[in-house]
Structures are given as structure tokens and as C-alpha cells.
Amino acid sequence: MILFIILFSKIFTRSSFLGKILSHGLKKDGMLAYEKELDGSEDDPLESYLKDASMYSRVVILCVRGPLVREFMLTAHTLGMTSGEYIFLDVEIFQGTFWGDHDWKVGDNNDTVARIAYEALLRVSLLQPTSDKFQEFADKVKQRSMEDYNYTISENEEINFVIGAFYDGVYLLGMALNETLWEDGDIRDGRSITARMWNRTFSGITGQVRIDSNGDRDADYSILDLNPITGKFEVVGHYNGLTNEYSPVPEKKIHWPGGRTDSPPDIPLCGFMGNSPECRNYGKIL
Image 1 (cartoon, rainbow, N blue to C red):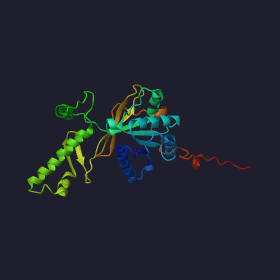
Image 2: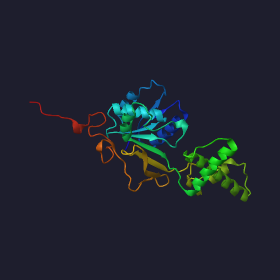
Image 3: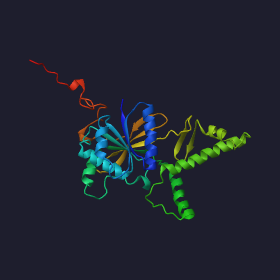
Image 4: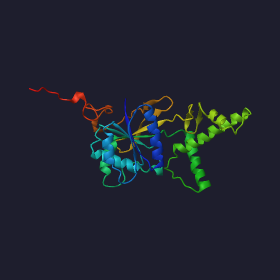
């Protein structure tokens, strides 16, 4: 079984919220080995956090803003943790100024080292819709932003998944209200309205929307890996939230660091503390 480590910031609301959700889910499945809630100050002992984490797992989840991801990866490289023995996951659910820049290149003297360190980093994000339906929606969002709010969205800026998800949420509420009115129900009965929104699937702006029995959406995610030639992150696989299946992108593969052809083993040969019986040299006393 793979055990995970989560590092998240308690002063950055989005990081704290997402980190605690991940922590709850991994604990529930018995897959969380270690978690640390960062203070978020410049004095955070990143080296100490990583050394502690290395004693529990090979997979480190970074649920922090982009600049701090870079600091963690630079520190991990200094500690020798980016040579293929550890894997880091950068949780960038969607791009936004509040998450900061998650790129390795920022124009300082550490760019070269950061570029190497990021080869040990995989990025997790929501699957960005690419359908014509969503593109038409995105164009309308940009148009309305300018006309109604005098806010210009640049041509190259993507309309992220969350905006489409809000639209789908309102659409789902509208369906529940229409069904209630059709059956002469009470639209002030919040419990009844909510119940109609659960356990259903419909085609929305963001694709197939699936709401489970708890009212949660079964979201789909993309896995991105750094192309060692271009230095750009590329989608290498998708995770289907409904089927819990991972599907690699055809003709794409994960470039594991350190010349590896596969992911590192869940547990080091000699254990995380180096005290596994397989590595003990008992010898004979003469």
C-alpha cells in the first residue's frame, strides 16, 4: 500500500481547506503516514519538514502556493530527495493568481537547479474541459466580463473549471426546482430540493456531471509531468472520478527522475529508518 505525506499551509485558506480534505480522505483509507500544517512564515524549517517526512513515506503531497512549492523542491534537491527515490505531488487544482506561479522558472539564479528538481514533481489538476460547448461558454464569459463588469480577460487566459462548475451547479438547482414545481411541491423545502440534486448524472458545460449520495461531485483529474526536453508540464494521464480508474494518455509516459523506468518502491529496501532485518549484517563472533 502506498502511504502519503501532506504538507499544507494553515494561513493560506485555500491550502488549509484542501489539505484538510485530502488528509481526511487519506486517513479514512488508512493511507496517510504523516501530515504537517505549515506556519506560512519565511522561517518555516522546510529542511526539517522534509527530513521528518522522509522517515514515513516516498510520496510527498505539496498543497501550498506555487512559490512555496519551488522552495520545497529546491530544498528537497539539496537533501538528495529528487534523484528518483521520492515522488512529489503538486496539487494545483486550477490556475489562479491566489495559487501563485507554479512554474520552476522565475528568472533567478536557482532556475537551473529548480528545473532539475521539478523532474521529481508530478502535478495534479482538475481535468480542463476542451469541448466546443465549453469553449463557446468560455467566450461568452469573457464577453460578459467586459460588457457587464468592465473586466478584461486576456486572450491567452483560460476560463478555469470552477467557473463552469458554478454554472453547472446553478443548472442543477434549476432542474431540482422545476421538478418540484411540476409535482406541486414546496420550493421552500430545502431538504427536498437538495435530495433531488443527489444521486444523479447530467451533461453540463464541464462535461458529464455526477453527483453521489453525499451530494459530492465525482470529479475527473489530470496528471501532468515535466517534459525533460521542453521543460514544460504535459498531461500524461487522467483519473476518472466515477470509475476510480487511471488512464494514461496515448504515446505519453511519465519521465521518472534518476534514470528510473518506473516509480520507486513504496518502502525502501532497508526500511525508512534503515533498520530492516533484510539489511542487517549479523556475522559470526569468533
